Length: 460
Image (cartoon, rainbow, N blue to C red):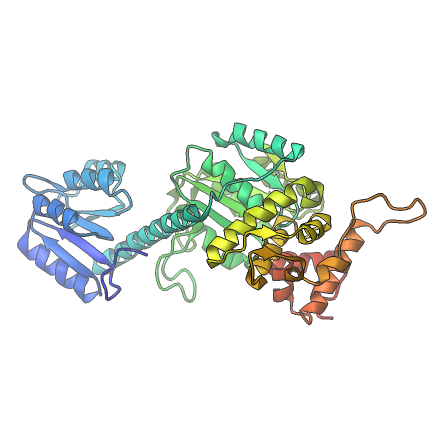
């Protein structure tokens, strides 16, 4: 969370050497619901920064002694996540450019309109919130385990990792291809954490999860009044990922009109928020992913050819878990430690029979499904051992044995096995698609697509 006082108000530092301006600004900000510390010069402002934490600093540019530029430089060096808005009665293009180059969030000239100032403050605080939440999430994950640990002994997967390491430090466009649950987002994080952007945000977005209008607002942001319900400016995910990586999952599911907008952003390296005509420059690496054959999606008219070639400089194809069976025991114990730590339980082992069942299973939901099995087992286990009774009962009947069938036998196709598995899970959940998707280790949109492809009525 942001550094707020006990009442939940954002804490703002205001620095201005003009007593009347300082008093008026403090009154306006406090009336708007903010906690304000007012300082009459740069020196006292820097002292206040040593004494307490702030979510935003508004400082006059021209002050005797330590001026606004000095305050800005100090904050950028010591408190890089705190946004700074420069205020001056001596407006000039040169000083504005210099302040922005030093890292000021924005620049406002006296006299200013109150609404303009309020919107600017809201935008700065929103940026602060996104940065702080991102950092807290990183620290939380880091305290549990290495989020970008990719556990494998599989030769094909090791080759994918070798390629990923080579391209990670570049800004080369990458498409990650693989079935649902194979770890496409984890691979995107691996690229991010092995790049020069590691200290900047990693932001993920599912392109098929939202309608076009909402997706545009989520990706590019919107201005106040851009549409009904847009009561304030909102920063999009591109801006939230500034300097870092934006992961676009299931990119082939993005509506064609949105694909046009995305292509323009990638080509021009700038965006326009919904409802705005002012371009915003961006510096973001985009990594796309899909569980579909994107070339086929292009041939079928569901993906733009120009966007496909813009994204497809390097393709990393992740093998399904059924082709990485030797990795299953290592992954199972990784998830066992993870969920035991999270739940503060002492489940330390997996029984021989339970492991045999896990290794033989076919995993239509891939690694995500294995993770769900282990999480369920940790919850249900009442001892130090996760045993076979702690796994789903359906696991036995849906197992694919790893031995050669009799010559006369006609093995079921992978599609038939997947269809049978989904039907069983839907039956277990009484047709509840949300619960079924959770058990399968995929999201509801991916389940809907599978139902459609396999010709299954999900309401049965």
